[in-house]
Image (cartoon, rainbow, N blue to C red; front, side):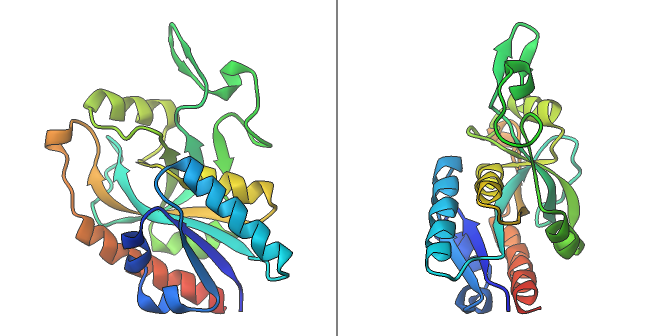
Length: 218
């Protein structure tokens, strides 16, 4: 049996994974709070505590709900599996537009620019859940068409959330394989025109919880 660390932002996401997943001794679900600082800190703290106790985790999964970006053709209630996690904001504002960390000239980590790699074996293990794609990690959610298009254009991502790259990054620093898996709860763009169905997204997260439990028990 594998020990899996799952990081979510809010209690409702934890509950949506399902009672069997949450109660399993093989799965630790941590409610970190909203945003990448909370997420990275919770992941790093929990991984360090487990290692010190001699009960290390073999994988870290960032999960929860996400917003579909323009042109992604993602349906609300769909599950997506990150093939890369991308920090959307880090970089430099230039006259010609936003530049990423390559333009700034400093590295964020042992990866190129703003693109945090996910673990290849975890991608293979979970990709049957849904579309494999880039997921952007944002500090500010896209509540205008211009903002949503900018994230899509700058990162090439199909969806945005607020924690994934930070969790995968923290796990990478600790030498633990990690990945981000999301369900789509809403469209992005002008706030009054957004479509939301959190219930459908939570139903989809139950499938994610089932797969996490199956993976832990394999």
